[in-house]
Length: 502
Image 1 (spheres, helix red, strand yellow):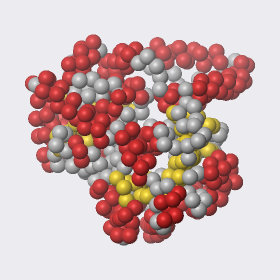
Image 2: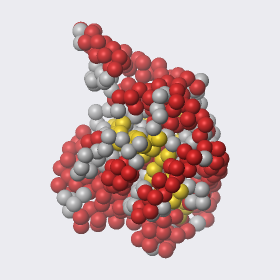
Image 3: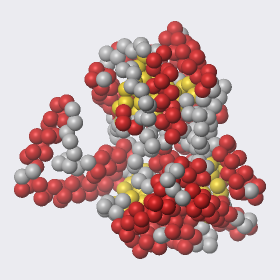
Image 4: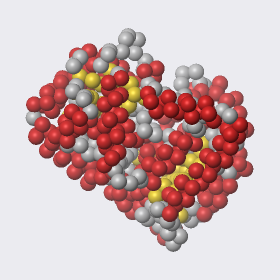
């Protein structure tokens, strides 16, 4: 594993040297890392950098440590002001508020969708993302892009106490369902929640738990958009878990989602498959409201490495093995199932290949047996490190078998020049790629993987053309700029709302 880490580190440094500037969102992520992991509060990690951090922290445990908060606040303020200069706001645009019940810089699929859509819609609206975070956080307003801001609104401690009290009933879904029941606490605790929502001309709800809050604040001419990347019932029941009171969870979730679907002017879903399921659950009356708004990627921001460049990068970083990557956050059943399949089926059959799992640590897996030595868990990594791994990877996987939503990993893989082998379920939401990607059911997945890996090694020029065609399709259909323009056109104006009831 040490040699792989060195290769990744070198690739990250090489690719970082090609980027002449940092995008605002990258700087925001760096700022968040600084805020969440202050200099003297965490371990130094391995290597020379880790040792330097440990020595620094030892020195900071002197009386000067009392000034740490002031120094961190000053650095944060200066960085925000610097970012703001690059992100002006056009006050003539109508205001759109995207309300999300989680930290939108948390590096998961849901957060990536919020950030991508917020920036894409900022060409048409003045966008404010209200991100609900833990009570221990300070309120913070951050520029995301021109015409887009993120407002981190800490929930009150009393709400978190209510969540813990409700865990016996709601299980892992306690936070979400308690938000719906205790929404007045957010009004009391957050200036931004009440002021921004009351001014919004368009209000996007990421989840139906926010419906009671939206109902209270939105004006009569506010367009309500239910932006639901997956069927929420599946999401809620999965997180509630078997220990929860399933009847109560189901009843409250159905009540909230039913109300949200009835009142929404637009219901945006990431895949046709999920759209059909929601329509069946909520009734045909919502059919006219449904729009497909897929997940996407900023294609031209990716570190695109066609086959010859990928091999040069690997040689420079002394990585000789065939490298296969899987990108997935832990705590999500379909991802864990996919990792089990890699551990138990693909890795043992290809001992000369290396399989890298991004987003999970070794403790996140659920395999009963030993993890083969050619499977490497790198955990949650920075955007630069993720890009370095994807740029060096020869092949990417999406072997999911169940659940809903669409996977942001698909366009992310392709924007880095990495071909994909996916199940039909893994490719859902990206049907424009069906004729180009390698698609196989789980029963035939191992054979498809072996055949594709052999093709990549034997026909590099053909593979270069192949991945170029896939990238062109992604740019045409799944670039955030394309998705944002279509989304903005679908959102009704005031005159349309007055002439057509929701």
